[in-house]
Length: 267
Image (tube, rainbow, N blue to C red; front, side, top):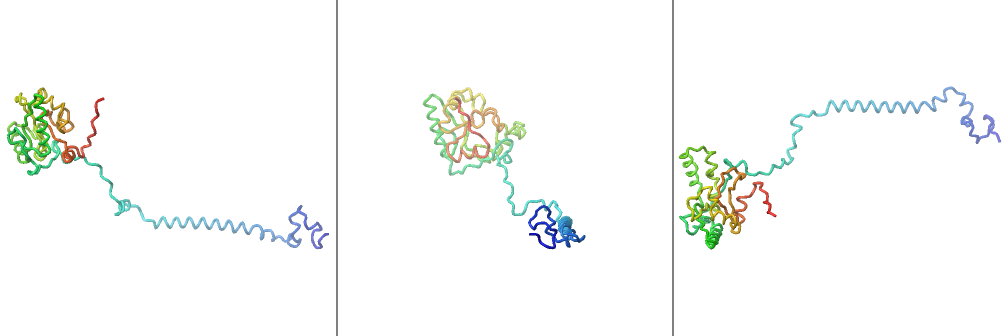
């Protein structure tokens, strides 16, 4: 059934979308722009306004943003300072020698068969045991020098150096500056061979039976040679100079913060 006043086609026809629009409206020239163009204009206008607003906001931010200066690039006051690198006490060394404290007088005892030579109690006990063990093997270990005060070392370093016309650097290759000798600790001892006294404090001490016995047995009594050939401190080779490293205090005193690595055990 056709509906009066329309185009004469059925109401549900889909062949022409304009059939559902009254003729009076379809024939009006201004009808289409009002229905289809107005949303586009609104859309375009909205986008343009948004873009302009963004540009203006960015420009204003640029004008008002704080400029970066040297002060603004510094770390905040509450920031933690960088962790310093581990120290190896290199700044405390003098001509290759490390600083050492002077042993308390109460810790020093006289070692046997000597000329008033003293060592710390723990070191003295082990040294006497070592001397006895060597003697049972037919080797005579003789202590030549033990504890030396800073004052004694000062006289030795400067007076002897002057007598020998040596510069401090030359003297340091043979003797530590005051305050930097292992003898201050009470753990160090200079050893000679009682059968060959002419080798005392000489590099040819390493040809004696005493030296050979020490090389083979000193570690059993917690003694070690301080300055072997080509040592990292640059001190002259001293095969007669040995130190005790048999307790916590001595171990930390001679090894702490020096970046030394464990020695490889021969296979």
